[in-house]
Length: 439
Image (cartoon, rainbow, N blue to C red; front, side, top):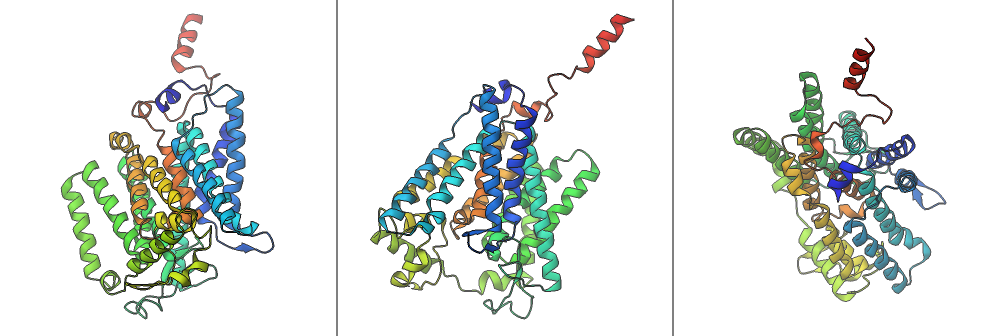
């Protein structure tokens, strides 16, 4: 279906193109907007970009529909739509107040709309290319902000700037803190964003057509690498580096990839990162056990959307220790709060969203940044099993939109130029022929 749409869709109207661009730009900016609660309305500042994006996207799709374009449906949207229905049933079954619907059904409806809109608008090569670049640049600004905050030791409200190291005895007093940037969530969130964007920036550097572009993208890659290290987030750091190593092995030579891997291991062993990897306590077993027990006792409807902490005291004590946090696993979080079927549907949706690996692999030469994006998204998924990234809207929305838009690449499409000539533009060869005939 995507191959047919890429090759045969009518030219996009200027209005639809502008609305589509606004849709993708707003989504690219979402993870980089500070989380600042707005009193009285139950929303935060970073809730508005995705809301505006949905409005722009729906208007863009409506314009395409009026022009007779085919509007395909992705199975991922159908799956997340079912999760939204399950979340509504969970809220009703648990007798939650209307405000709790914002954390459950409403969030998943918004996610479903973004998935569907990104899949439809992703047929435009210019829009999906722009989306990927803007997402990387916006994240680079976030990394630069976080690095600046780390240098000046600024710890702001709502997880702005850096987060102090009092919890991490092996690092406290050695470093001023961990980068959190502007995500409004703990440093693990910044680590996930930088790990996702690190291989993409490296892909752009590998695919650059001139030396100046290559050096610019190498600088962005280095910025993400430094910022990722300074988040001191173990799983994102490993997955970000592994993604780059795999990209180098496939795009360049295995020896280059091996050198990069060895360099990373040496840096870890020769720096305080060694203590962060080996010295700090890991509480995942107790957190996962709590989520499993919570799901077992509330099998079909969970404990209710956004009710994990309310139910936690009853299940905190496990044979692995006492849990004091969320499930730190996206699937277990879904199962514990919404029920077992929500956990199953989320797992299937994630697998379907990554099903474009064969296409991505064939693009590793012509579009290394697209293949790198798949590697980054795959790393994000692996990391989501150690923390509930899909329940952090800033990150989950970006993942779904990138996965859906970039899945529309086809090997046949990369041979065509990214810029499609306007219908009224006369090709150069035709103009030359007309000039010769007049002579």
